[in-house]
Image (tube, rainbow over all chains, first blue to last red):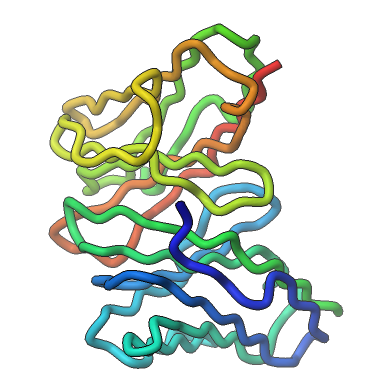
Length: 113
Length: 113
């Protein structure tokens, strides 16, 4: 079963605009991760935020986590055509050797040049 | 060589046959996880191997089995293939000691006809 649910399912924006993607989950987590997937290929790890963190930045990415609402958001600033991909949030109830990711269905982001 | 390598990249099998997929983990990673991603869905956890032993399993039948070798590479075996086994199979490696997320391979696209 898929714990995470991303919103919206699809997003189309103009290059240079910001893209905000949301994720909700159901059970307690140790950490939440965001991944990108281009054209049905492998997943690329973008960022990990732990349950005791509220916000994290990595380059043009900003992730927030609200454990009371069981939700997270991924903000991509100044989007580029190369950001066009599917984005997945994945929750992890434990880190380290026993970690297992539970993914949502993903968000399709299209960035128009 | 860094990164996760999966082979083959594409495979076509007939219903009822058996298949073996292979994965080489990233250097320094001793944990390997396998995921199944059906078209339009998020990846689903199959199982994880840590130090050559199965370390957790998702909701997949016993005809899905695996191995991890002393060099931390891994195999996924699927017996008695069914049409619904058609999917992208992803391998991911991680280090429990320095856990910052998973490194995924590019996947094996399996088509069962």
